[in-house]
Length: 223
Image 1 (cartoon, rainbow, N blue to C red):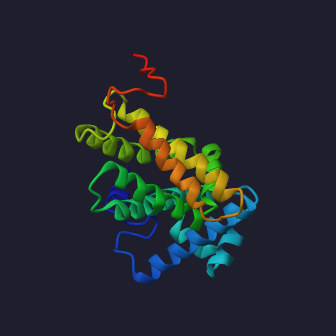
Image 2 (image 1 turned 30 degrees about the vertical axis):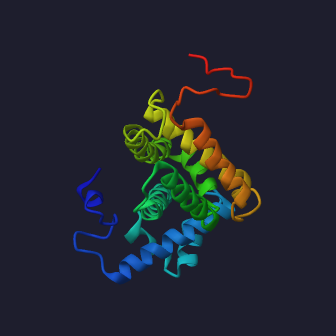
Image 3 (image 1 turned 90 degrees about the vertical axis):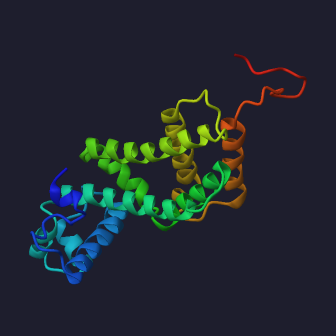
């Protein structure tokens, strides 16, 4: 990772701190790419189309991004950062794992309803830049795993689970639930009853082992 990116400075804007105008143009390019890559796909979208949608000259595009491929990768990173920020703000002040899950998943589903093209962008990055695609999910998983470890210490998640497994189970559940009820219907909100079923599944599946009967009839959990 370059020093420029570690410092949080957008690429291709020189060594000086970017101006508000430069940051605004860069944001417009990202927003245009999000819409066009989601609607027309990466291969069918040209730099000229992106520049026009962002309200800049085609030549100005290369002041901000070296190529269309770099823009696609940066777009996924940008959306990932925005998603993590919204989830982090949503769970702030939570006092239990169940509250963390409720707030976090609510923020996750809300973000995807507002950015339904993110699914298609993810899938395009998988083929154009597979390393960036993997890093996107690894970054999400690291944060989920950290939260799972903390919940295990508090006795709110069964300690027999591996935190990394829990993290990817969270991602898979959230991802495909959002795809089915948000992307496929065209960016709609997740129905409340479906959201409640997600939380119920997490509560029943990941909760601590109390040693009680697993189901009616007194059958105990197999070891």
